[in-house]
Length: 328
Image (tube, rainbow, N blue to C red):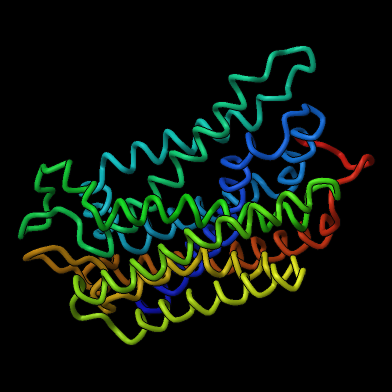
Protein backbone atom coordinates (compact mmCIF):
# COMPACT_ATOMS: atom_id res chain seq x y z
CA UNK A 1 0.00 0.00 0.00
CA UNK A 2 2.81 2.43 0.87
CA UNK A 3 4.59 1.74 -2.41
CA UNK A 4 1.34 2.24 -4.32
CA UNK A 5 0.82 5.69 -2.84
CA UNK A 6 4.44 6.57 -3.50
CA UNK A 7 3.77 5.73 -7.16
CA UNK A 8 0.65 7.92 -7.11
CA UNK A 9 2.71 10.79 -5.71
CA UNK A 10 5.33 10.17 -8.39
CA UNK A 11 2.71 10.16 -11.16
CA UNK A 12 1.26 13.48 -10.03
CA UNK A 13 4.66 15.10 -9.57
CA UNK A 14 6.00 13.91 -12.92
CA UNK A 15 2.73 14.96 -14.57
CA UNK A 16 3.15 18.45 -13.15
CA UNK A 17 6.67 18.86 -14.54
CA UNK A 18 5.72 17.33 -17.89
CA UNK A 19 2.83 19.78 -18.30
CA UNK A 20 3.73 22.94 -16.38
CA UNK A 21 7.32 23.00 -17.58
CA UNK A 22 6.31 24.55 -20.89
CA UNK A 23 4.32 27.24 -19.01
CA UNK A 24 7.48 28.50 -17.35
CA UNK A 25 9.50 27.95 -20.52
CA UNK A 26 7.18 30.16 -22.57
CA UNK A 27 7.30 32.76 -19.81
CA UNK A 28 11.10 32.89 -19.84
CA UNK A 29 11.22 32.97 -23.65
CA UNK A 30 8.65 35.74 -23.97
CA UNK A 31 11.11 38.67 -24.43
CA UNK A 32 12.99 36.87 -27.20
CA UNK A 33 9.95 35.82 -29.21
CA UNK A 34 8.15 38.95 -30.30
CA UNK A 35 7.99 42.61 -29.30
CA UNK A 36 4.69 43.24 -31.08
CA UNK A 37 1.85 43.27 -28.53
CA UNK A 38 -0.56 41.33 -30.70
CA UNK A 39 1.97 38.54 -31.27
CA UNK A 40 2.90 38.54 -27.60
CA UNK A 41 -0.73 38.07 -26.63
CA UNK A 42 -1.04 35.23 -29.11
CA UNK A 43 2.06 33.62 -27.62
CA UNK A 44 0.57 33.80 -24.14
CA UNK A 45 -2.78 32.76 -25.56
CA UNK A 46 -1.20 29.50 -26.68
CA UNK A 47 -0.98 28.65 -22.97
CA UNK A 48 -4.48 29.88 -22.19
CA UNK A 49 -6.44 26.63 -22.21
CA UNK A 50 -3.72 24.69 -20.34
CA UNK A 51 -2.22 27.16 -17.87
CA UNK A 52 -4.33 26.65 -14.75
CA UNK A 53 -5.09 23.00 -15.49
CA UNK A 54 -1.36 22.23 -15.49
CA UNK A 55 -0.89 23.68 -12.01
CA UNK A 56 -3.69 21.49 -10.63
CA UNK A 57 -1.23 18.60 -10.84
CA UNK A 58 1.01 20.35 -8.31
CA UNK A 59 -1.95 20.96 -5.97
CA UNK A 60 -2.90 17.29 -6.20
CA UNK A 61 0.70 16.18 -5.60
CA UNK A 62 1.05 18.37 -2.52
CA UNK A 63 -2.27 17.04 -1.22
CA UNK A 64 -1.07 13.43 -1.55
CA UNK A 65 2.26 14.38 0.05
CA UNK A 66 0.53 15.95 3.06
CA UNK A 67 -1.99 13.14 3.44
CA UNK A 68 0.09 10.05 2.65
CA UNK A 69 3.63 11.05 3.65
CA UNK A 70 3.40 13.70 6.40
CA UNK A 71 6.78 12.81 7.94
CA UNK A 72 8.54 13.36 4.62
CA UNK A 73 6.70 16.64 4.10
CA UNK A 74 7.83 17.93 7.50
CA UNK A 75 11.49 17.03 6.93
CA UNK A 76 11.67 18.29 3.35
CA UNK A 77 9.88 21.59 3.88
CA UNK A 78 11.87 22.33 7.03
CA UNK A 79 15.20 21.43 5.46
CA UNK A 80 14.57 23.44 2.29
CA UNK A 81 12.47 26.24 3.77
CA UNK A 82 14.25 29.03 1.88
CA UNK A 83 13.80 27.29 -1.46
CA UNK A 84 10.13 26.57 -0.72
CA UNK A 85 9.56 30.28 -0.04
CA UNK A 86 11.31 31.41 -3.22
CA UNK A 87 9.41 28.76 -5.19
CA UNK A 88 6.08 30.02 -3.87
CA UNK A 89 7.04 33.63 -4.62
CA UNK A 90 7.93 32.65 -8.18
CA UNK A 91 4.71 30.69 -8.68
CA UNK A 92 2.51 33.47 -7.26
CA UNK A 93 4.26 36.17 -9.29
CA UNK A 94 4.07 34.18 -12.51
CA UNK A 95 0.42 33.15 -12.04
CA UNK A 96 -0.79 36.60 -10.99
CA UNK A 97 1.08 38.35 -13.81
CA UNK A 98 -0.32 35.94 -16.40
CA UNK A 99 -3.89 36.54 -15.27
CA UNK A 100 -3.66 40.31 -14.75
CA UNK A 101 -1.52 41.33 -17.73
CA UNK A 102 -4.35 41.76 -20.25
CA UNK A 103 -7.19 42.42 -17.86
CA UNK A 104 -7.42 46.09 -18.95
CA UNK A 105 -7.00 46.73 -22.69
CA UNK A 106 -5.75 50.29 -22.13
CA UNK A 107 -3.27 49.44 -19.35
CA UNK A 108 0.51 49.44 -19.67
CA UNK A 109 1.72 45.84 -19.57
CA UNK A 110 5.48 46.14 -19.14
CA UNK A 111 5.45 45.42 -15.41
CA UNK A 112 3.20 42.38 -15.86
CA UNK A 113 5.43 41.06 -18.63
CA UNK A 114 8.44 41.45 -16.33
CA UNK A 115 6.47 39.57 -13.65
CA UNK A 116 5.81 36.70 -16.05
CA UNK A 117 9.47 36.44 -17.08
CA UNK A 118 10.86 36.91 -13.57
CA UNK A 119 8.33 34.61 -11.93
CA UNK A 120 9.01 31.86 -14.47
CA UNK A 121 12.77 32.23 -14.01
CA UNK A 122 12.59 32.12 -10.20
CA UNK A 123 10.27 29.11 -10.36
CA UNK A 124 12.58 27.18 -12.68
CA UNK A 125 15.68 27.98 -10.62
CA UNK A 126 13.93 27.10 -7.36
CA UNK A 127 12.68 23.76 -8.67
CA UNK A 128 16.14 22.86 -9.91
CA UNK A 129 17.79 23.81 -6.63
CA UNK A 130 15.10 21.96 -4.68
CA UNK A 131 15.39 18.69 -6.59
CA UNK A 132 19.18 18.97 -6.77
CA UNK A 133 19.30 19.15 -2.98
CA UNK A 134 16.98 16.16 -2.66
CA UNK A 135 19.38 14.20 -4.85
CA UNK A 136 22.61 15.22 -3.14
CA UNK A 137 21.08 15.42 0.37
CA UNK A 138 19.38 18.20 2.33
CA UNK A 139 21.34 19.88 5.15
CA UNK A 140 19.78 17.94 8.05
CA UNK A 141 21.13 16.88 11.42
CA UNK A 142 21.29 13.26 12.52
CA UNK A 143 17.80 13.55 14.06
CA UNK A 144 16.30 14.95 10.87
CA UNK A 145 16.09 18.58 12.01
CA UNK A 146 17.45 21.40 9.81
CA UNK A 147 21.12 22.09 10.32
CA UNK A 148 20.61 25.83 9.96
CA UNK A 149 23.15 26.16 7.16
CA UNK A 150 21.09 28.01 4.56
CA UNK A 151 24.04 28.46 2.20
CA UNK A 152 24.38 24.68 1.96
CA UNK A 153 21.21 24.69 -0.15
CA UNK A 154 23.15 26.54 -2.86
CA UNK A 155 25.91 23.98 -3.22
CA UNK A 156 27.51 23.59 -6.68
CA UNK A 157 25.64 20.41 -7.59
CA UNK A 158 22.25 21.94 -6.74
CA UNK A 159 23.23 25.12 -8.61
CA UNK A 160 23.91 22.97 -11.68
CA UNK A 161 20.39 21.59 -11.40
CA UNK A 162 18.98 25.11 -11.06
CA UNK A 163 20.63 26.27 -14.28
CA UNK A 164 19.76 22.97 -15.96
CA UNK A 165 16.08 23.44 -15.18
CA UNK A 166 16.10 26.87 -16.78
CA UNK A 167 17.47 25.39 -20.01
CA UNK A 168 15.17 22.35 -19.75
CA UNK A 169 11.99 24.40 -19.35
CA UNK A 170 13.07 26.76 -22.14
CA UNK A 171 13.53 23.78 -24.45
CA UNK A 172 10.11 22.47 -23.48
CA UNK A 173 8.49 25.89 -23.90
CA UNK A 174 10.01 26.33 -27.35
CA UNK A 175 8.83 22.85 -28.39
CA UNK A 176 5.34 23.72 -27.14
CA UNK A 177 5.30 26.93 -29.16
CA UNK A 178 6.42 25.03 -32.25
CA UNK A 179 3.12 23.15 -31.92
CA UNK A 180 0.74 25.80 -30.57
CA UNK A 181 2.09 29.24 -31.51
CA UNK A 182 0.92 31.12 -34.61
CA UNK A 183 2.46 29.85 -37.83
CA UNK A 184 4.58 32.99 -38.14
CA UNK A 185 6.40 32.14 -34.90
CA UNK A 186 6.98 28.44 -35.57
CA UNK A 187 10.38 28.96 -37.19
CA UNK A 188 11.65 31.12 -34.33
CA UNK A 189 10.35 28.65 -31.75
CA UNK A 190 12.14 25.78 -33.50
CA UNK A 191 15.41 27.72 -33.62
CA UNK A 192 15.12 28.45 -29.90
CA UNK A 193 14.41 24.79 -29.16
CA UNK A 194 17.49 23.72 -31.09
CA UNK A 195 19.58 26.37 -29.36
CA UNK A 196 18.55 25.20 -25.87
CA UNK A 197 19.14 21.55 -26.74
CA UNK A 198 22.90 22.05 -26.29
CA UNK A 199 22.80 23.39 -22.69
CA UNK A 200 20.22 20.73 -21.78
CA UNK A 201 22.52 17.99 -23.05
CA UNK A 202 25.42 19.57 -21.15
CA UNK A 203 23.30 19.55 -17.98
CA UNK A 204 22.40 15.88 -18.42
CA UNK A 205 25.98 14.79 -19.08
CA UNK A 206 27.59 16.86 -16.30
CA UNK A 207 24.92 15.88 -13.75
CA UNK A 208 25.30 12.20 -14.67
CA UNK A 209 29.11 12.18 -14.49
CA UNK A 210 29.17 14.27 -11.33
CA UNK A 211 26.50 12.09 -9.73
CA UNK A 212 28.44 8.94 -10.63
CA UNK A 213 31.27 10.06 -8.35
CA UNK A 214 29.24 11.96 -5.73
CA UNK A 215 26.19 9.76 -5.11
CA UNK A 216 26.13 6.45 -3.24
CA UNK A 217 23.68 3.54 -3.21
CA UNK A 218 21.93 4.47 -6.45
CA UNK A 219 19.11 2.01 -7.14
CA UNK A 220 18.33 0.29 -10.42
CA UNK A 221 15.20 2.43 -10.65
CA UNK A 222 17.33 5.56 -10.37
CA UNK A 223 19.62 4.37 -13.14
CA UNK A 224 16.56 3.65 -15.26
CA UNK A 225 15.25 7.19 -14.74
CA UNK A 226 18.62 8.60 -15.80
CA UNK A 227 18.65 6.43 -18.92
CA UNK A 228 15.09 7.52 -19.74
CA UNK A 229 16.18 11.16 -19.58
CA UNK A 230 18.86 10.62 -22.22
CA UNK A 231 16.44 8.64 -24.37
CA UNK A 232 13.78 11.37 -24.14
CA UNK A 233 16.36 14.01 -25.05
CA UNK A 234 17.42 11.98 -28.06
CA UNK A 235 13.82 11.65 -29.23
CA UNK A 236 13.19 15.38 -28.81
CA UNK A 237 16.38 16.34 -30.65
CA UNK A 238 15.68 13.94 -33.51
CA UNK A 239 12.10 15.13 -33.82
CA UNK A 240 13.19 18.77 -34.04
CA UNK A 241 15.58 17.89 -36.86
CA UNK A 242 12.88 15.86 -38.62
CA UNK A 243 10.26 18.61 -38.14
CA UNK A 244 8.09 16.28 -36.07
CA UNK A 245 7.24 18.99 -33.59
CA UNK A 246 4.52 17.12 -31.69
CA UNK A 247 6.93 14.26 -31.10
CA UNK A 248 9.54 16.79 -29.97
CA UNK A 249 7.06 18.21 -27.47
CA UNK A 250 6.27 14.77 -26.07
CA UNK A 251 9.99 14.01 -25.77
CA UNK A 252 10.65 17.28 -23.95
CA UNK A 253 7.70 16.65 -21.62
CA UNK A 254 9.05 13.22 -20.67
CA UNK A 255 12.49 14.76 -20.25
CA UNK A 256 11.15 17.41 -17.86
CA UNK A 257 9.51 14.70 -15.76
CA UNK A 258 12.70 12.63 -15.49
CA UNK A 259 14.51 14.73 -12.81
CA UNK A 260 11.57 14.30 -10.42
CA UNK A 261 11.41 10.59 -11.28
CA UNK A 262 15.14 10.31 -10.63
CA UNK A 263 14.89 12.09 -7.26
CA UNK A 264 12.03 9.81 -6.17
CA UNK A 265 13.65 6.53 -7.17
CA UNK A 266 17.33 7.34 -6.61
CA UNK A 267 17.79 5.30 -3.41
CA UNK A 268 14.35 3.70 -3.04
CA UNK A 269 13.07 2.60 -0.52
CA UNK A 270 15.05 5.44 1.10
CA UNK A 271 13.32 8.67 0.03
CA UNK A 272 15.34 11.24 1.97
CA UNK A 273 19.05 10.88 2.62
CA UNK A 274 21.41 13.31 4.32
CA UNK A 275 24.76 12.82 6.06
CA UNK A 276 23.91 10.70 9.09
CA UNK A 277 20.15 10.65 8.45
CA UNK A 278 17.93 8.42 6.32
CA UNK A 279 14.15 8.32 5.96
CA UNK A 280 12.54 5.36 4.20
CA UNK A 281 9.20 5.38 2.44
CA UNK A 282 7.71 3.27 5.24
CA UNK A 283 8.90 5.70 7.93
CA UNK A 284 7.56 8.66 5.94
CA UNK A 285 4.08 7.15 5.48
CA UNK A 286 0.95 7.96 7.43
CA UNK A 287 -1.18 5.52 9.43
CA UNK A 288 -3.01 2.72 7.53
CA UNK A 289 -6.37 4.27 8.44
CA UNK A 290 -5.48 7.46 6.59
CA UNK A 291 -4.61 5.47 3.47
CA UNK A 292 -8.06 3.90 3.65
CA UNK A 293 -9.66 7.36 3.69
CA UNK A 294 -7.47 8.58 0.82
CA UNK A 295 -8.48 5.56 -1.25
CA UNK A 296 -12.05 6.87 -1.39
CA UNK A 297 -11.08 10.23 -2.88
CA UNK A 298 -7.76 10.01 -4.72
CA UNK A 299 -8.55 7.49 -7.51
CA UNK A 300 -11.74 9.25 -8.73
CA UNK A 301 -9.97 12.62 -8.55
CA UNK A 302 -7.03 11.25 -10.55
CA UNK A 303 -9.35 9.85 -13.22
CA UNK A 304 -11.14 13.21 -13.54
CA UNK A 305 -7.78 15.00 -13.76
CA UNK A 306 -6.56 12.73 -16.55
CA UNK A 307 -9.83 12.96 -18.51
CA UNK A 308 -9.99 16.76 -18.26
CA UNK A 309 -6.35 17.08 -19.34
CA UNK A 310 -6.95 14.81 -22.33
CA UNK A 311 -10.09 16.69 -23.37
CA UNK A 312 -8.28 20.02 -23.04
CA UNK A 313 -5.47 18.91 -25.32
CA UNK A 314 -7.87 17.29 -27.80
CA UNK A 315 -9.96 20.47 -28.03
CA UNK A 316 -7.00 22.84 -28.35
CA UNK A 317 -4.57 20.76 -30.35
CA UNK A 318 -4.37 23.19 -33.27
CA UNK A 319 -2.09 26.27 -33.42
CA UNK A 320 -3.36 29.69 -32.38
CA UNK A 321 -4.66 31.81 -35.26
CA UNK A 322 -6.65 35.00 -35.80
CA UNK A 323 -9.89 33.34 -34.72
CA UNK A 324 -8.56 31.81 -31.49
CA UNK A 325 -9.89 32.98 -28.15
CA UNK A 326 -7.05 34.63 -26.22
CA UNK A 327 -7.43 33.85 -22.53
CA UNK A 328 -4.59 36.22 -21.53
